[in-house]
Amino acid sequence: MKYVVSMMLILLAVLWAPQSVGALADIADEEVEIHRLMDQGIIGGYPDGYFHPNRDVTRAEAATMLVRALHLQGTADSFDDTDGHFAEASVRTATQAGLIGGHADGTFRPNDALSRGQMAAILNRGFTFDRDIVHFTDVDASNMFYDDIIALASSGVTQGYPDGTFQTNQSITRGEFSLMLARAMFEEYRPDTDSVNVDNAIGTGVVVNSPTLNVRPDPSTNNPAIGRLANGDAIHVHETTGNWALISSGETRGYVSQSYIMVDYQHHASPLYGQTIVIDPGHGGRDPGAVANGLQEKEIVLDVSLRLEEMLREGGANVIMTRRSDWYPSLSDRVAQANSANADVFVSVHTNAAGSTAARGTETFYSTTYWAGNSRKLAESLQSSMLEKLSTVDRGVKTANFQVIRQTEMPSALVELGFKTNAAEAERMKTDAFRQASADALYEGLVNYFD
Picture 1 (cartoon, rainbow, N blue to C red):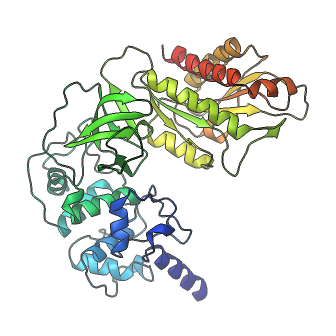
Picture 2: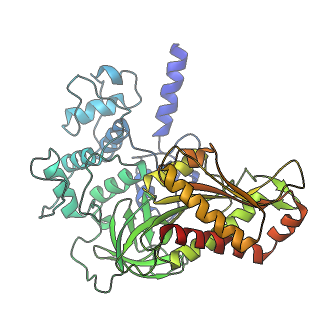
Picture 3: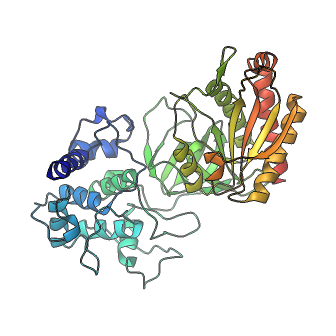
């Protein structure tokens, strides 16, 4: 048992041991704040070579980062539930310095997720900020974190949400906390909090599904980022160009990928305007899906989904893609992405396969776990549109227990465009005409659903 415990401690210690930035596969070169914290030995990656910025930061991790940032010395710990924990000394030091406290029952709960309110408190205790008047509808003077939140918000370290809330109890990810800590330590990373001219804005929104989002000088990745936004930062959208949106946030103004923003447009000329739609191209990366007649499912559905994404954006929808290239997000990750975005609908795109080469046609599945009636309506709308556009055999709308439609907490459907194992349908799937018709069909099905 002692050996097992020792190995666990070694593994956890490695998690926060400084590593070379190049070793972390999920941290881009432009994420300068995280790079700087790593260079200074404040944070490190996991043994698998990843930083995992989308994971919730724990109380122990936050204490460790803050102790290192402030160059405090760790000692033995007095909390029973941190005895032998990798952050034992850091927790003791942070509590002695008054940066973070334990719970009334005498525990620290090191593995609990840190909330946004707690984040504001520990950063405000560790650093000095200017204070101005900032208002959040869900934070009044009686809130225990009121002074901390106002100090950080008025200094540009953190922002609220477009609806005027701060969401004190919402958890914060490793990437978000790293960005906030870097902003607290280094003023050059803080967005200007002065007002910005938002004339001609076509909508307001928020950064989603990205702990840190690059702001570019033009609608491309050809030039270095001119700013950074965090998950939850409020934005104004001024125009859209392809997959890019010209936004402003504070004094920051530039282009961001529309894949990472959720926007409420001011002029709803289309039923899609302001709707958040998650498109899930099935399989990907190491999982090709079914393979038959020279076709891989993952390639077909990604092509169709990217075409659909562009059409939906032009229609004013907020589109979240579970993947936009050949990689494999787990089924749980796809579900979590949709649920965390509070999406309006979820559509998973697939092509079919069967043991019999005679099997053919189009079918759509939905689950009755959440929004059964709306999910059926969505599935029927998509199926009807696909039959009209693709002229395929109608295999019907059916219930199923697929994880991505069973666990998504919004109206959801999984479509099967046709059978790769059927020679005639496979030949059609190889054509640009079929793929565009599939995207057109799904687009019209979604328009009809929301209309």
